[in-house]
Image (cartoon, rainbow, N blue to C red; front, side, top):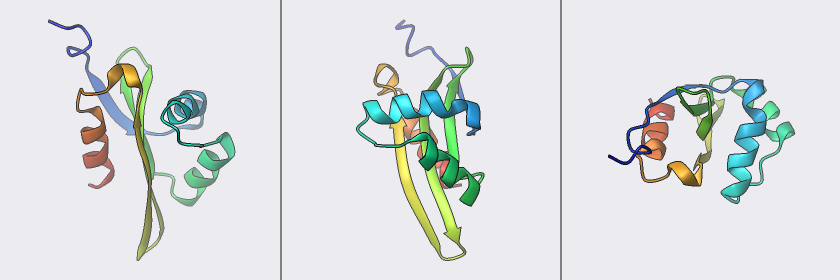
Amino acid sequence: MNPIKALTFRLRPFVETDIPAVVKIALRSTFQYSTECLLSWSKIDPTGINVAELHSGEVVGLGATINHNESEAFLGAVCVHEKYRKLRIAHRVKMFIFE
């Protein structure tokens, strides 16, 4: 069995210490997110950014949906590290952020 396909991960809320990993994944996916952008979003909607994390602690994906108010939300991104694509991580992230 392909060891990559056997990996398991969990979805959890973003925390500030995730910033370096999130920025690295986003930039490799052509999203121009910065530390300042992520901090700003997390202040507007603390539960709006979530990450996919391997059991080793490595962050391999993210999803951001920021609720600005009761009637307006912004789907910011769904990004997955290229090594872990095609494992349905992005699908799980999207389903998680839209729950």
